[in-house]
Image (cartoon, rainbow, N blue to C red):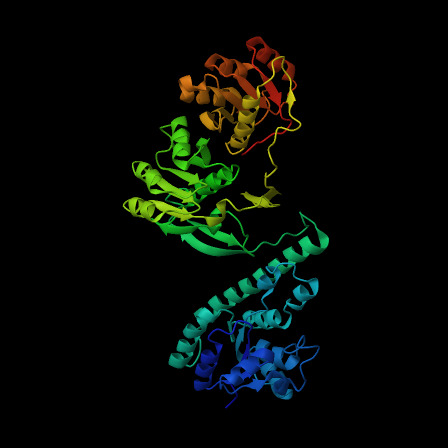
Length: 516
């Protein structure tokens, strides 16, 4: 009767001793190396060192252990190919039926502050991925296990049936290839950034891990899921939030909440951002989040129905009393008081998302990925600080200091609204928002129509230049008192002349903020 061998070489040793014991009870001999060998021996598990199998010692401080024909021939031999079995017999090599392997902790290593390049390189596993790929390639005959959570399934099948089913072997092989692909992608991306600094490589490999499947995609007939980037990105992102209550987040909930979080991060004062269909419909800063909510909601009292709201301060009982009167899908905040959780907890379906670092984040370099048919678009995330330094007054009348401060607030708002976009603000609250239109004049009309009398005395911001004077005419008729825009149109002078006709100060920022 031929030997039944299982090679066990793991860094994550959770449950591996118990799994090895179960394999032994089913007639397997355990072969292990390095730290795994020592760990299993300490746990009282009988195991043979891989060097005894190969006839060669571990080399170069453990860099070479399992990279040997005796190991890989035993794994890769096809059991129903006469030539393969003959070769094994000629060289006195035993087939290996089970490979249990997971890899050096590269992700944990690079997460350390000021980690040395030497330590990073030493945590690039070579033998492990080779073992895993060999076993996964030969899934017709070999069982490969990279995930400790699968130990019980494999042990149970072997105990009950004497072997692992082909269906399980195939599933485990796919998981193994995913495990190695993720590992290699993280290494490639990290080393490219650290050693080469290339932002857009010739071949891009990305790694993401499943967080959850959504109830459906944008519509009920579509499937959807949400993934976290690997390695995980620290900071105030919707992916890092913690759900305190409510239904599972939908695909659209996540898109809307992401927009709300990105926008609320623009401001340091107590702020409320209300989002509907991935675009803000109300933004305000005030002395309290309750006042900020009231001002943001007043921008558009229709659109928040079924919307998402983000705050950059704790949600307290006073604010919760007000929010509980509205139909909202999601509320995001750094924290929620105990009283607020009790009040909002009465609305069982309302999702409450806690994002503690919403005020301690740092704007950093980040890439944005968007899918297109058959490919991917990548760009820098728009995190450029918005300040009035370098802005240029182009009209006869100049804005006041208060108007200039409102312009800064307005530009911070408008870059989060879908293009074509315009925003009207009074102080640090929006009074009219128009976005997602094919013509800027239409966006202006929508904003002034919704803002009504509140537009009088407001400051208008546009995400891109005015191609014609028509939007200025609409704004002036509604009572706007100052305008800020990027400039850069061939008809800039026509637009400036229109502003001068109305006596409206106009400022050019020189910076466009399209959001498609």
